[in-house]
Every structure is written in structure tokens, then in C-alpha cells.
Length: 177
Image (cartoon, rainbow, N blue to C red; front, side, top):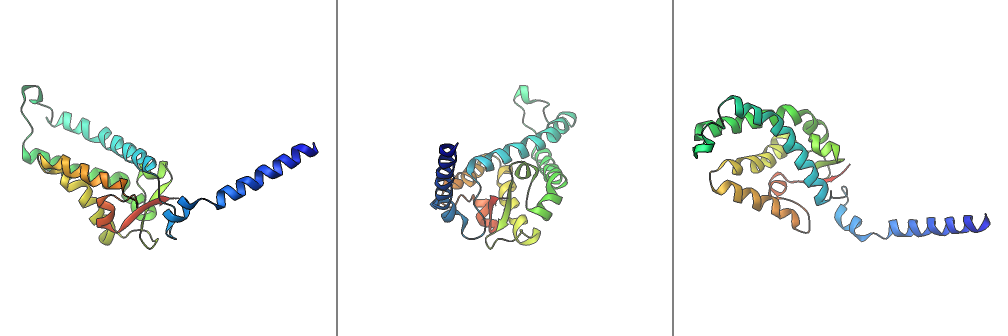
């Protein structure tokens, strides 16, 4: 019994030392929260994307968005623009309240991460969120180049500060809650 207590005490002391000696946490925090991992951000993005697909795919089906695809006919630019606007509206309806109140989308809420400004405050809609999501959504709508621009945007997450181009444009970062 005494040996068990001694071992437990040593393990606890080791754990305390390990948690205080984690340079990654200190380097990544910059005093305003620990940066979210790339995996958590990816998971949150996948959840947000799936939620959007649940609404937009049936809408595309019932509005003829898939008609002609088997024949190699692409939807018109007008249709794509209409669906882009619809997608933005759906995104706002699904995530708007969470984004404004907590800096989170549903995916970010699930993964316990949130968007903050560089000084640690919740982002304002007109100063941060509009810029952030404009950079995120608009390039994807450009024929041919949109996919490449969107890829470049997200590849920036592999930088030291784990910030995509839309984070840089919005003056934001994503941290653990």
C-alpha cells in the first residue's frame, strides 16, 4: 500500500512536470489561447460541409442542378450563382447565431474550438467574419481557378501559425475552447 502511494506520487509529479514543460502549448498560445490542431479544424470543416450538403444536394436535385450531367452538360453560370447565394444563406441560417455569439460553427462547437481575433476577442461580423468567409466562399465559385484558389487557401494551415488565407484576411485564428 505504501509502495502504491509512493508510485502514485511520483507519477503525479512526473505528470505535473510534463504539463508545465510543453513548449508547443506556450509557443502556440501567444497569450490568447492555444491554437486548434489541424485535425480538429479539418474535422470541424467536414462536419460543416456535411451539414451544408444535407441541405444543398436535395435542393440541387429538385431544382434541376443535376439534369444533363450524365450528358456532359454543366449547369449555367446563373444557376451556379443562385446556388452559391443559396449556400451562403443556408450557412448563415445554420451557423450565424453561433458565429456571432461564440465564434463557432456547428463543426467547431462539436470539436470544442472557436474563432477569435488576434487579440483574443470574439470576431465582429463586419470587421472579421465577413472578410474571413468572403475569402473562404467566393474563390470557390470562380470557374476552373476556384478549386485551385480554395486549395491554396487551406494549404496555408501548414504554416507555423496554422492560419489559412481566410484567417489572415479576417485577422482571426482558431483556438481551443
